[in-house]
Length: 231
Image (cartoon, rainbow, N blue to C red):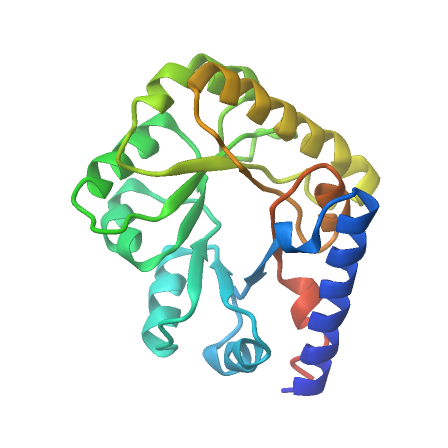
C-alpha cells in the first residue's frame, strides 16, 4: 500500500473542500468529509484513521459490521451511506453515528420504533431521488413533501436532513441541478414539518465541489481518497 499517496490524496481533497466552501462564503468547518471505505480492507483504512479521518462511510451493512469488528476504535464515527433493508436495521442501528439513505416512510417508521429502545440512536437523513433515475432509491421530491406530517410524527429517531445522489457519471455542472433541488426540497420540508433539517448529504468524489457550493454539509468521497493507493 502507498501510504504517502493516501496522505497526498487526503490533503488535496481537504484543500478542494476548503476552497469550495470559501467560494460559497461558508466556513470550511461547516462541511464534514465522510471517507467512503467500501471494498477497501481494514489494513488500507487504518492509515487513513492515523491521518485524522474519523468519519467513515460504508455502503453495505454486512461490510460495515465486519469493518467495525476489525477496526476497534471508539473515536470513529461510522456512517451507513447505502441502502438499508429493514431486516438489517436492528443490528445496524447501535453501530453507526448516521444513516444517510433512509429511502421510504416504511423504513423510517421501522427505525423510529427501534430507536425508542436505543440509548443513543443515530441521526438519519432522508433520501430524495433528485435525478429522476428509476434505479435510484428514495422519495420523489413532491412525495416527501406529501409525507411531511407522517415524517414529523417520528419522534424517537433524530431526523436531521436530506440526502441525494446525482446522476451516475455526472460531472459538477450536470450534477448541480440535483443539488439545488435537494436544497429547495429541504427548505420546503422544513416549512411543512417543523423539523430543522440542518444537514444536506450530497456530493461524491466527482462532484462534491458543486455540492458544497449548493449547501452540502456532508460529502461522501472514496475514489478521490484511494486513487493510486493500492499500487
